[in-house]
Image 1 (cartoon, rainbow, N blue to C red):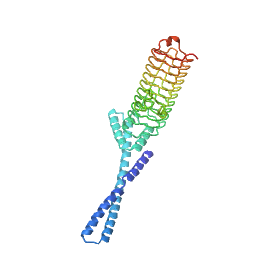
Image 2: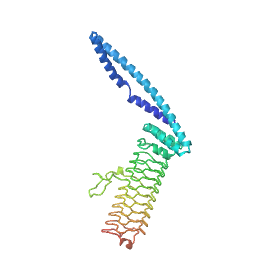
Image 3: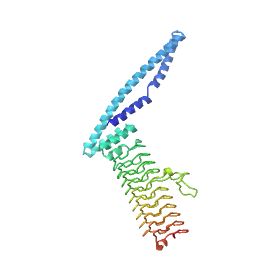
Image 4: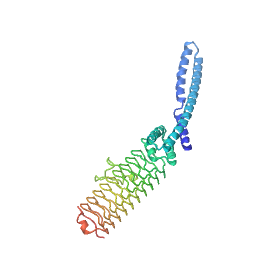
Length: 381
């Protein structure tokens, strides 16, 4: 709790600086000086005495007002901090000790009210305090809804399974090696967030912005990543290349890093992964239908049993990937590198393999007879 208290004290010091009474005192003193000058002028005093009296009056008035405001502000700050500490502890223990759902709901609402009165640093301190002492993550998530406290926050190795952070702003947050298993992160902004080594298995990231995020070694097994964006932003002038395709090479810093990520069974239907690094990733049984992998790196990835129906893999590097039993029906693989890839048992119905490189790949003539187009396809070593 000491960290929370220190955070509050820093907040009060900052508020004293920002709302320092000197500004008000100066203007009040100048106003008082004008009044004193006019009174002295009416009473017939000489110019020198008028100026001296006005300045003395202004200085005394300013100092008096400043002292009074500093005193009242300090007292109210101390009272507020004591009240907040007491209220937070009451809410915390009430939430932990009650088994009554109605009382728990009241306590949860009260906790939300408490956290919303704190500033960003204080909310972050409270979050870490509650997590450390075992407050359910579901209560914390609901209380933080709409907060900006987590932008750029360091939450490395934090344990928040099942937490609801849907639609929250989590830009540049450090979730390295965090436990977010089963968390609701739908619609969140994780722009340039560090999620490397984190546990996001069975989490919901539907429609999330993961541009520039570090997901290396992240466990996304069974996660819902449908309609998420991992590459350069969709639409706009910068999102289209000279041929009309979405380009990402010009902004490599906006590409997510998913090498060695665990994405087995993940739902990534319609996701935008242009230029994303998925080398050695585990995508076994994942739903990648209608996803956009233009120029993506899938070298050595495990895509066995994956659904790649109508998926765009134009100019993607799929060298040495495992595509056994994968469904590539109506997929677009123009100019894709599939050297040494294993397509045993894969469905290639109406897929487009124009200028694709299938040299040393495991694929049968029967399979290639079902493709939609294979002009300039390379197959012989």
